[in-house]
Image 1 (spheres, rainbow, N blue to C red):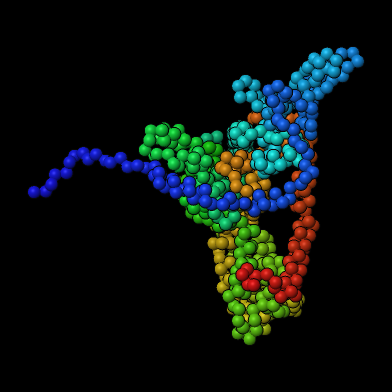
Image 2: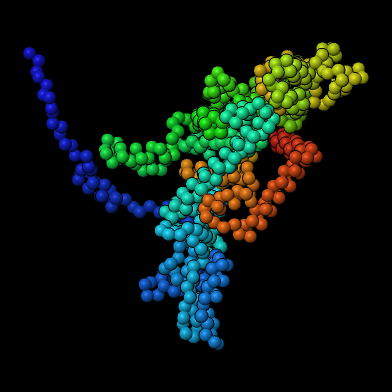
Length: 615
């Protein structure tokens, strides 16, 4: 007869601490170990200067006043008001002191004392950004905003103030509170402006098409790109950005992070306890480390969230998606609007143009030996040589990029199948003409079969061949034909018909990581703040973005802030106009090609002096 199992078995209470004998061994081991001198400690002790000034002791309860030392950031309004109130006896003068017990970061309390009657007038060097409990000095909040705009954290701000000779910034907990207020203000300001940008885009579409009603969804074209805080797709933070192709303004962003400080702090808590469950319920909706998966998946997840809320948020449908083709974001959002609207993919012609160099470089690396004509693949006239801007490879890449850009059509023509097929076939023949024309075939009719009748081909115009030092030997026709056939695929060329680039996305990404440097560790709150500040700067410019964020932080735009922002906007417009000129573009291309040709010549002359693990 089987033995009956008792309904309740009392579990033994195991000791979960560290046993006494183990603690004793650790204590004895610590006593036996010699004190380790670190490399930093050794270097600092060896280079300690004897010329450092003797520091005075800190303020005491009986003597908190001290003569003014170093530099102070003083509000002109506060100083003028204090001078008006200060009492000075006839024949006397004012003696300034500092009450160090009331110092709060960059905000100090100064005292003006009459030299005769010793009557004092006390004033603070900075106004308060907000009144009531939890008030904060305006200078400290401005310092936090300035540090966030230039990519500094509190440590960088400490170095800055120490070199200036001013008082140090606020403590780390106070700095985090200022950063939280800044993050909230930047989030509100950027959301309000993106909503205005989306409404402007809707009005623009409704003006062009009067049949669109107020409650209808408007189909627009956008450029989407993902960017990461760390290179190599191993980042804890990723950002997805949608920019309107028509207006060039940022419409929506999504920041995904793997880490959350509060979650990491509570990793050791008992997951089954009531305390942890109560905290988890309150923290679930505000947790910043919401991404689960690899860093490369961030771009896909961000696209799904942005496309999924476009109808409810802006009454927009992102029908055309311009991307670089580096992720599976398009597949994830292709049918997100259902049967009513299918998302169409467009390719950035800048990224597509780079594929030619990668393909030609791969052909050169895969054919190390001799070809059918008994010669090597590169390093000689008539062979496959050079970089993306020099030699025969540079010539083929340049012609491929210019061919795509010169055969583009308007966005409205994408809805006409006949116009698309005609434009794609014209572009395909022009790309094949690059290869056939660049190979010195003996049969001129075969060589120029794809060349246009009234275009750039000298043979079609005069019937004579015109040689070029970057023309290739006949053996390269068969070698490169599969590459040109793949890069002239009709589906690929159809996505390149509008001829649009993602340069605006790259510019916006640079603004983000200027405020949040990639080589430094940053938390999710700092990354989100950097994204929101970048949105305001990208869409509005310096003056308007400063006004919006200052208004949210209850700060005042002074005359110096306004003038500096206006100068920055003027310089931005001037620089953009200069770079947009054709002369400037040709000059940049020529300088880039010259620089690369010089580097290539130097490496060939030196014979290669650097190779990873080669020496």
